[in-house]
Length: 114
Image 1 (spheres, rainbow, N blue to C red):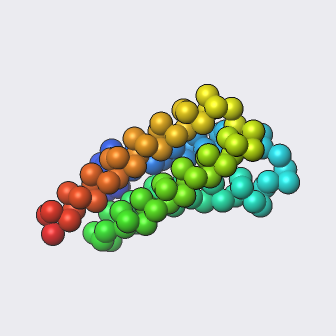
Image 2 (cartoon, rainbow, N blue to C red):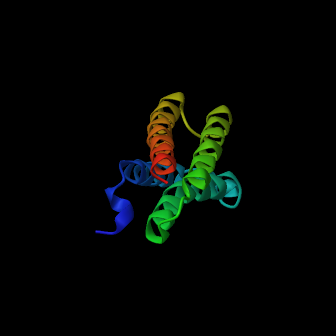
C-alpha cells in the first residue's frame, strides 16, 4: 500500500475529489475551463500534496490545507451561482470540513514529531 493511503486525511481528501468530479460533470460547458477546472484542480491538489508529502517524507500539509480552503470558496461560489443545490453544497462542504480537520491534525502531529 502506498504510504499516503494510511492517512485518514488523504482518504477524505480523495473522497472529496471524487465527489467534486461527479458533481461537476453536468456543469455548463462554458465553465469547463473556468470554475469546473479550478475546483477540480483545488480538490486534486489537496489529496495529491498529501500523497507527495508522504512519498518524500516531507510536509506538504500546508499546501493541502490551502487547497482545501480554495475548494471551500469555490464550492460557495458554485452554490451562489446555482451550479449546485444547497443540499449538494452541504454534502461537499461537510466532506471538505472533515478532510480539513483531519489534515490540520495531521499537520500538527507532524510538527510535534519533528
